[in-house]
Length: 336
Image (cartoon, rainbow, N blue to C red; front, side, top):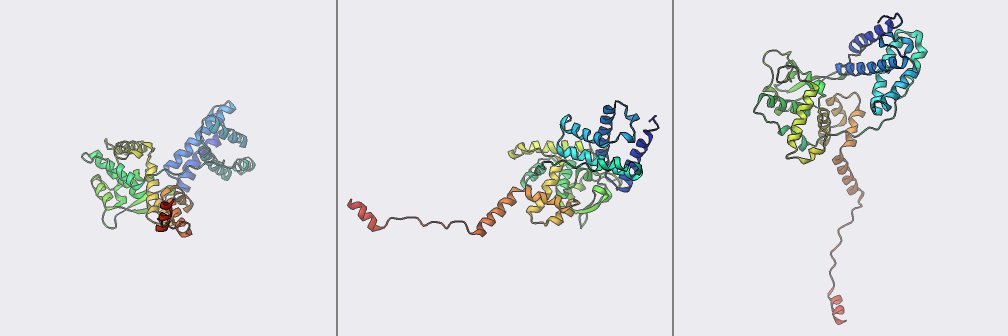
């Protein structure tokens, strides 16, 4: 940046990502990228509004009116949902809080931005696969090739652990324990570690693909030996969902993403009677409220609860006795 006014904005942006997000908060790379994209969109929008280059923007340009205009632009011009709008605001709010800690002379300016409220958003129910559908997808993998062995291990791992795709792709040989007790160490949001048990079937599949060279090598790689990407996982999953539709037609109506496998794990645990607080720790949720939404999602559980309630209420009518005409009645009718 050439402008002396804009130099503080650059330095504070750098310290926000390097010192605060990565070192202080320990934010995941996924969070860093999401915040980066949000601020980049905001700065480009702000520069266009001010008829300046991004290099000429300064701290004095970050005003509440500009943020509100940007949020309106996100929804009206970019066609984003209220949820996406709130995510953009969360990134800006976190950045402005950092500015406030470093530049208290503009406390009033920053405070007005921090007072912007989230917009009420419609939260759609989580999409998930029933256990038999998940088994159909995993069972569609052809294991005769090295790639097939990797794909089966990947799908089993996602369903078994309920791991976020970023967590699964970060797993190295040293994170796995394939002897009893079979388990994996996952690094979740906020760099929080958790241990997940592994099925013997998952362990057997992982043994087929674990690199023999170094414990520091990533487990899931593409055909060229490079780390598998999020898009790569999505492609692998969609391929086997399509194959599974041959025997499970209901899958044709589903949009199955890697995160759907995480939802499917959560619902299967609920159906098995596992307590919500245990599932929270299993999935690495910060709040049990996040986990509880799976209860409202599962229709089968609702049906079972309703059936139990109906039976308990005693409203079911007793089976009526089959009517049979008496001999006298028949005799009367015959006499007519």
